[in-house]
Image (tube, rainbow, N blue to C red; front, side, top):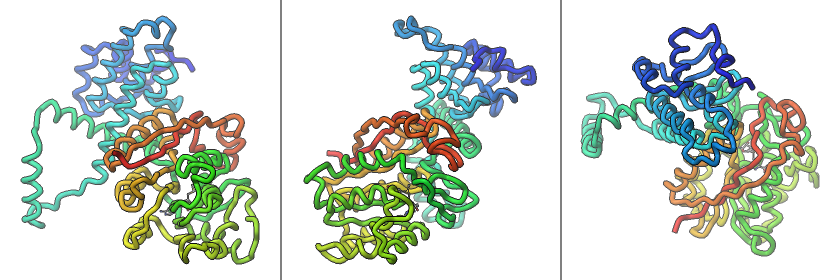
Length: 453
Ligand SMILES: C[S@@+](CC[C@H](N)C(=O)[O-])C[C@H]1O[C@@H](n2cnc3c(N)ncnc32)[C@H](O)[C@@H]1O
């Protein structure tokens, strides 16, 4: 990777953009400031290299050296941080990618610049938190539509808000940045989606195939893959404990997939075991295996469909319905479980084709009512896992939202053997036949959530 200024600012770059990029490269704030009054200027980019002022301000630092590390007050990095913070204040987009598919935070991470990486991380977190708030924000009706309610809301709002000009400017700059974030995410960076499906073909209507331990949707996205087995094992141990301690618990799992985690849960002899699954083909595979009386599934040793279905449901000796596949979307089933007074010792959530807002909604709306006071909640933590900075941003975002929902989270680092598991090259090894690797990192952060206090 050539990180020189000559390689990054091309001859095709417009003169004004060149001037901004060069000033950012030098961390020359007085030179940058006059440019930033125009809309979008903080996020201008070289048309050939995709270099933005944020990339330039970080890249010019070069790789961290031993003496930089010893010198806690690395002056160059301090200047870079000031420049980066100023650009962000004026709406620079935190996750624009350059021609090397790197966001500014990716460059900071590659160069070992921890101080400026942290600034980018916080910027990503602010943008994503704001995005989550705006996404859930209900627009007020227009004047006259419902005057009584509007007046009440308006009064409440003006009473609560202490407006000050600086905060206003920052909020505006951040809102602009956030608008742009939305664009950037759909175009380039998958930050908000755990395992995305194609927008053209809604996942639940998509045809599925199962080859070599990979459940794949019609667009070629990996729905569930055998390499996640170790993560499922550890998630079960973290939620239920091991040995006799794991026996006799009430467990809810959302998302059957290949049934890997359900097979592990079933082996602990739970008192209740409920599974929510919505995809008709996943449900049909469970039924087909069960109807034919097959002892093993057709999809190989990682396919556990044959272990579930009617025969399994009938094995519950405690009471009818204690072992059950709940057919439908969790969004429709969970309200019924709540109404029926179901309570679980462990709940695991691992769906596909839903974005982060759904996971957020699930633990905010349903965990408080469905999880026992001493219970444990776990989820597949694949948020933003196709790049380091997005994964780190989402770790913090989810931590804050969990805390809003009254949950503490403990993270356990799990090594992912990228080379050994054939996960290190797109289109090859485990990713053969898969459209896009949804996992690229060497460490999985396994969440174990419990109620606070
Ligand atoms: C990643 S797989 C789960 C893998 C599972 N943890 C295992 O160990 O095999 C995700 C599953 O969630 C299901 N799913 C997706 N959206 C859902 C929804 N809204 N409600 C219920 N299930 C859903 C998918 O059909 C798929 O079977």
